[in-house]
Image 1: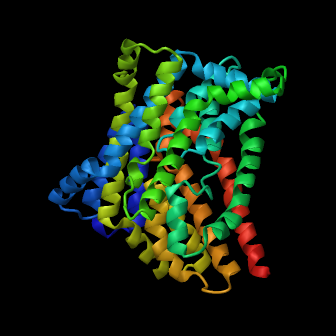
Image 2: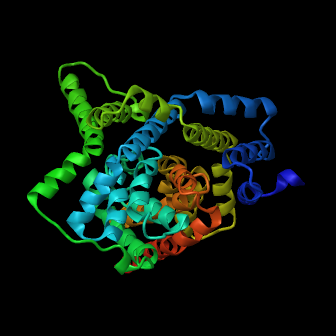
Length: 429
């Protein structure tokens, strides 16, 4: 009887269990691990299959690269914070904009151009530095950092989820970008209305100083970020040149950002005259271990989700209940995003299932369905209790889990309603 429960109900129950255990003050990494075990057994995975899934989830390249990438981000963040490099970035942009509230939103957006897992950790110290004198709660800082960190992920071609979506949809990249880019504007507006507006203006204004010298100074201070971008581009160019010469070589997508992060660490150490003792202390900081345990728990949860085929069971259940096609196209990616908590996760698990439901022609109709699916999947990911950026941001600011959710719920709902309205309008034309 217990195993006859629909897969969707099982997933929701497991999420409820994770939230309850966290409310009882168990560490979130332990809550996720226990939830993974419950889900695995409830989905009828044999004990040896659960153990195998856990082992594979922890030893595959993507997980190891996540450890290295997130660890590198934590090290850079601590070094930049302790050397006051973060302060210089925030103060430089605040002088250019004249408004620290604007700086608090733009700096996470700037980091968002880098497709790094857990990249919100990079911008979190910047947000903290921006608002630390203005009595903002940890939940407010979490919302600002988390929301504006993700405004580009609908269409920015460096994100693996965008690359995979374009490949599965079999459309040209520019066509996907044109269709999805307006959602970034809508996301910014929603963030300004629901997240930034409650922050008092008079507490975050500073004198505006805009000059070429200030611009150059700001660019110099954000060089650690620019280095990561430049190294990624350099590696792509090098790969292309080698391919033209008949040599096929490329770094796995999971580790392609790591070289840039390592070069950035060297730059930060050199510019700020970081000693070996300071670098060693940053690497072995206790906070690094807790975040890495959280990453491990997330990857275990995703691995058991995949091995249990829960997403496929949910799709079958929705089709059985004869739900309208456009709702299935919206709900499947949303649930996949909620379950996996990662962009490439909701695209990879749901798009192969919903794309066959799209009208083949005309292209406008086809992309309208694709946009609806992507936006709902993305919003599911933003709401996911296993989304790495949300979890590490919440932990960084020591924010309450549910109170942080409340601050991002309204803008997420606004995005989803906008996507539905735009889709329904497209049906008229």
